[in-house]
Image (cartoon, rainbow, N blue to C red; front, side, top):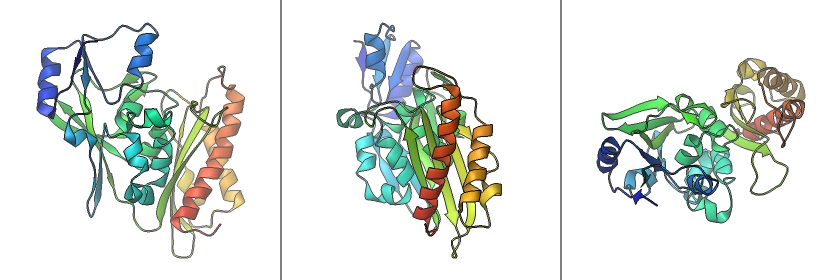
Length: 286
């Protein structure tokens, strides 16, 4: 297997510029099964896990920085991250088995560009951005700009994600992620749902966002969730309105894991569950 492991971002960029047939990876949990299934390997595989900035996990007074190649197992063990982004940690903890968790990463999960990727809805609903490196330098874009379709991203062959950035959530704000799968372990989401809710001092909703996965070629931010919920407690009528909005705005397919109608139904169920969980974590009374 043609393989290189640069130790700096500049080294990786220089190699990619000089070897246009190369492909980076942040864990290889998808590349190896794909190659065994017959997909042709690139000229070189470029392992990003030896670059310190790509495997970091840092927070200051205002900002989280999560290296794009940081193993999911590190994310799920970090109590600070679990306290502020419990939904993202839940999503990261669903990537494969315990063994896979030591290699899988947010960058790999996002750039594999599966519509059913678990961390996509959480990254989007929490408004993460991605720092992208290329031979021309670095730029920062919203996570929503990365995935363009199944197996497709906006990144060129000589670009890769360095880290993910997000503002620390304000008091009274929290998130949640849930998915439906036929099996309880090591399965792919039939529908995935990420929510973020903010509540006021008396428990009323002040902001709410919802993003669904596995219901379209890319993640789907549901429009109108805040309008349906803001200014009131998260009661059943409000949740029903949110579920209706979700079901109206998705275009799932039918496949061997679920029909289109089944996915629409499940999207409504998960919408209510994740909004309620996120609100309770934010401080609303159940």
